[in-house]
Amino acid sequence: MVDQVCRLVERELGDPQRAAKLSIDFLATSVGLSPDHMSRLFRREKGQTLERHLMVRRVEAAKRLLLDPLNNVSQVADRCGFS
Image (cartoon, rainbow, N blue to C red; front, top):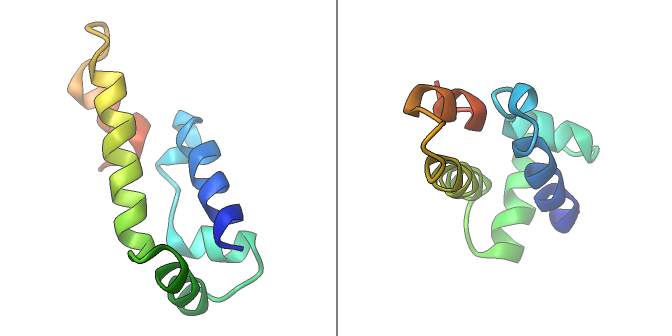
């Protein structure tokens, strides 16, 4: 389940329209678990919280996008799901 959630995070972050809607509730529902149970499983297996994992993946995606001078900060923030 945890690996499935990790793949789902990568796929959703690759789609700018879906990245903004990426949440723990969405991820847990997608794999058929409650958000609390998914968070516990994730932390047990990965050694970090699901919230932390999402933030790290968003920041990494933003860093890659900001290397392109055609992207401005506002566009990158929207695309990576930062409000």
